[in-house]
Length: 180
Image 1: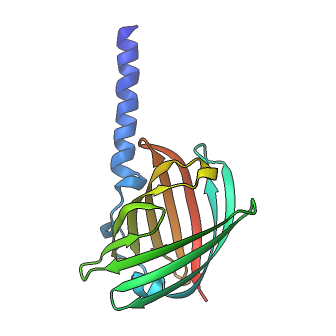
Image 2: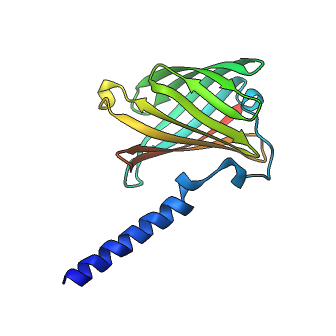
Image 3: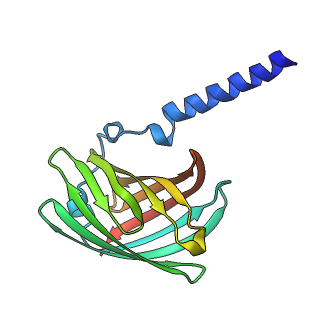
């Protein structure tokens, strides 16, 4: 019985290790050298419309949303305001201060982000990682976020984000963003 239990534990560990090495969290911007090149200073500039879905921990739709963004850049420093409307009737406002270094490194701050978000842009993708504190009516939890944006042939950006608590995925977001 002990050997069976140890075998199951090893199998689970192998699956988790493979997922960590090959899955969502293992991506790098260097994995996306083809496609339309991305530049946060132009792709997230001006008026932007966003529409998306948030999935719960078991992959079921938990919420739908629509967003209107306004972004402006002065060289490598930018500001972006996001206004979200959720299908529940709730609204959310977030203001980002963004900076891009010549090597493609991105740093960003927002009032509900703990510390500084860090990431990179390169090829046809952007990644940003940060910790976010949810509002009290959403539980007040602090979640680790990995936020990916990819260019599409039509000019839209496709955003996929995962939210984790203690390393366990508790939600995922898929959205499209298009400049207007």
